[in-house]
Length: 113
Length: 114
Image 1: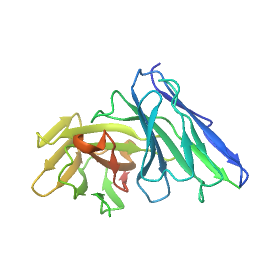
Image 2 (image 1 turned 60 degrees about the horizontal axis):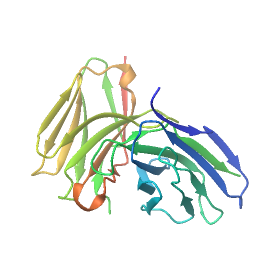
Image 3 (image 1 turned 45 degrees about the horizontal axis):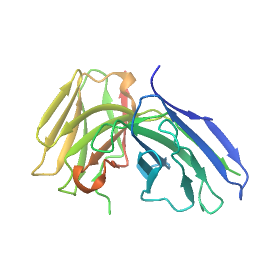
């Protein structure tokens, strides 16, 4: 089955710890994205990557880091510098970085205790 | 400053009737618009899109209308079904300068009552 996988679905971490969220796609898409959703809010862009080994900051990149070493994978690290990390994180991909439709993974709910 | 606005946080409709979800945008450079449906604790699912060169796009029970002069789009669901109950997000993108990034509205929660 082609698609985007995110794991785990639920993640708990202690305050001050870095945590890495996984995102894998087997759609052969060039572009990948990370969004954050908070209650009552739309999706806000954290980071995006249009090709391997290249990525750009989105609207709310502070306290996050990413890597894009492989086309299929775009992990997101939530660092201890992120002041309000508890949220629902969504990964997406699109065929190219133009106006192609983005397809989303199932999301990871991160709770920092 | 919100570039994409969904001014109705919620909408309740009777099963079988039409659901109309509205979306306004401010950036005249937007040229591609999408609607996503989202259930709680799941990723958004793509529903339907429309390019700015069109004013209507239809896919089964879902139709999106675009009024460029008013910077307004709407999603019509006919007939509405209980399974349509979800949060609907409007999103917009500008080919030039955005590199495909989508700007999302805050969503409208649709409840379809049997």
